[in-house]
Image 1 (tube, rainbow, N blue to C red):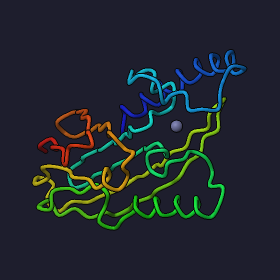
Image 2: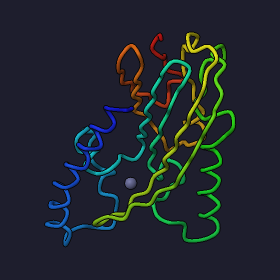
Image 3: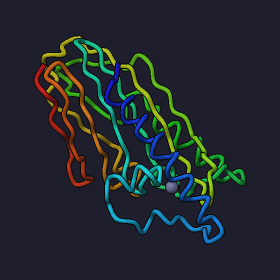
Image 4: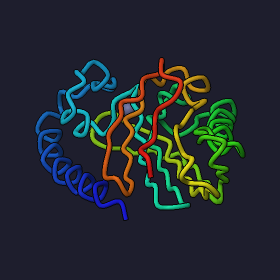
Length: 196
Ligand SMILES: [Zn+2]
């Protein structure tokens, strides 16, 4: 379905293999800090370092009445740490974030005229332990059905209000009119959707 994403994933795997050699070679010098935090916004580099704090990705596939969305966010943006919860407070923070990401009204809100309803919504907290620093993220999927897809005009979000460490969402929209990339900065209240 999301051909581009599959391609991207393959890219990440290939690059991941390359970087793992690099990591091994330098692991004796690796510090425990999140070394990617100070790195530039260079796109290729971000893929190598798995994710960039402050930047989430959102894939949106529009197909007639059906919308599928997939969000990946660095856990640092959502809960402020990237490891398994170490105490009850952190456990509660993870669970609270998961419930926010599964709000019945949705974190991402489509034009009301389109009359969209969430049919399925899953949120997971994932911890990935690699060489050196541990990273964690939230992975959320939505399946949505809209009565009037022709009236889909824009998309709003509560994401930046809920999670103030989040600065940007890299959006990729796949629809009948092709593929579009949008950099959704926290200062933007909404983005426009392609006409169907
Ligand atoms: Zn990280």
